[in-house]
Each structure stands twice: as structure tokens, then as C-alpha cells.
Image (cartoon, one colour):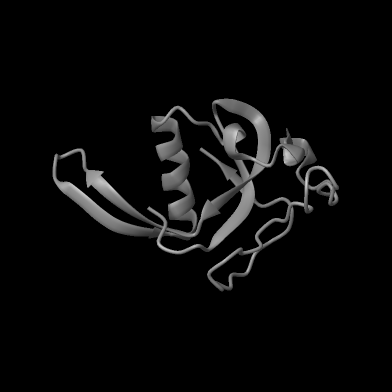
Length: 119
């Protein structure tokens, strides 16, 4: 469950789609509830990268891959991550941005276009 309306886009990848990445916007803070491997209840707030990873893995449990959530204009091979992102387009909307917070007023320092991760 999102804890605020703050979200951020970064390149994501997955071993299910090896060698590729795409920009995916995810919530910056989420509440996680469920049961651990020992059967005991879990209830915690995940923030930052932990929140992104939780969302990515929960998507898998729901049959969703990052390619289903990514900005398709940003899909690329890993050796092309540093290439420029596409510009704004009248049909497809504003230019995608990396590491820009939307909503919530959270301020975070971020790196360049090469930043991303995979699971």
C-alpha cells in the first residue's frame, strides 16, 4: 500500500527479460503486510530501494513484469543505458525523466541515466 503519492522513475531490469532495462515509476514508500517464512505476521514500511524491490517482487506474484509497467519509449539494451531519453511527443506525452520525484515533495539526490537495477 503506498504511504504517500511520491513516486520516482528509474531503470529496472529482471532476469525474466535478461539484457534489457526500462524506466519504471514506483512509489517511494509502501506498507508491507503479510506473513514471514516462519508464519508470523509482518507489518513494516519499506522506503527507497527497498520499496522498489518489494513492489517489483509483488508484481511477480501477481503475474506482472516490469515491461508491463515501464515507459515503453525507454526500453533498451543494457549497453544503451547512457543514451538520451526520448523527447516529449504530442501523442505519447512528456519526456520521461530519471529520478524526478512526482508528488509528495520528497527531495532525493540521484545519479545519471546509467542508474538502474535488476532482480
